[in-house]
Image (cartoon, rainbow, N blue to C red; front, top):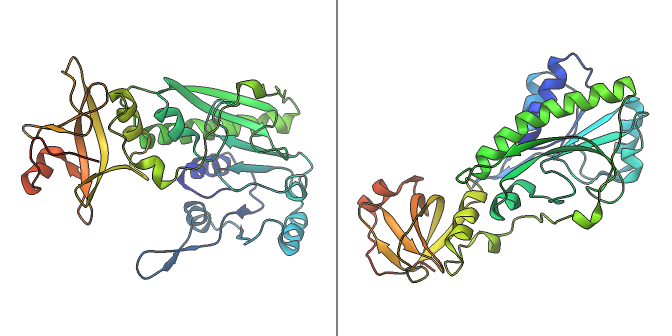
Length: 302
């Protein structure tokens, strides 16, 4: 059971190791773009390429969907980046159900664990497999793997690394369950931290924050949904920045330099914007952007 690109390596590794996939469960195709053309999820695309059975329920509590799952006679449900399963669903398999989560639980429970780990300046994250229970992201931990976060790593880079390592942990977990050798470790709820869904207001850069926080927000949201700032009435997406060490303090949001790079003051420290995008234009490096976009030293981002 899964939806985005993050789930594809886990499905692939199970196929590559000759496990029988009774069915793949994913979300219904969603309309996208101006023509509202319905686009299948990455997991559905992979499933179709490998001629796997598909279920795409509108509701996970629908009686016909639950009956379809029971008819499959599944041994195990493997859940990766999917929706919250009701109890009547995750209790169907005789060997239970487990989820792959992109954090070191109990830290960063929620929909956006990778983004918040980077935004909060963590030097490490990881993946966890855990048994499904009624309360979201709270079940007993089966396996974990730790992954370092570099000071300039973006969400996209950490996401891709975790997807690959997560697939290996999924395979290892399935093998342990198959052999009856799993040991569950309870989560310490006192150490839990939230990772809520990223909303638009989370993406706007607050230039009054210290430079480290500005830098971490940019990289934690890059390449999507992407941090942004306003220049007058124009929206500029910011994909990559660099902290300028030992720089003199600038006024928050004030553009300090436009040549050779685009340098901006923050509440404490100075940052250089390396990659950005104007509405309706393509993403580009700042040097190229500055050749075609009028912006002056002393102007302000808001």
